[in-house]
Length: 186
Ligand code: SF4
Ligand code: SF4
Image (cartoon, rainbow, N blue to C red; front, side, top):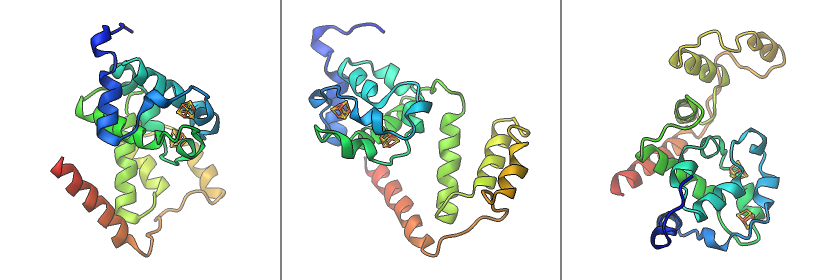
């Protein structure tokens, strides 16, 4: 990481502040966000470290991390933060900035997985696991990846062949429509 000069050391912090009204300067590095995060074992950079890197103006390091794409937006971190920093909201903004800057995440295909996951939600209101795995494997050119797990999961009732649609699918679709509208106004 290269250290910025004093004049622009707060650039990234200010960018986040402007975009979502969250001030990472308030972070005291207590680590409560990371300790409660259910996905933290899979992340390459822990949520509290993401906040620290924003303070240190390491824009590229943050936007390249797998963490921002693995975050499930469960809000546990936001609820636990003693400084009331909405970390989940920051993660959302970081994903947006990463896409805008066309930055490749450390883990190849992680952005593709995120898009296929959202497509599945848009169609059914909930994810269809089997469809998601098949589409992901085909799109990423690895059709047989984890195929041995399919029968085991099916036997345990974790997979449904056809998937389910939620009753109020129209409301989910409306959320997607609204977010598209908001994006086009930005
Ligand atoms: S919102 Fe994201 S970072 Fe925060 S606890 Fe949930 S998965 Fe972890
Ligand atoms: S919980 Fe809040 S104050 Fe503590 S490390 Fe995380 S962001 Fe910082």
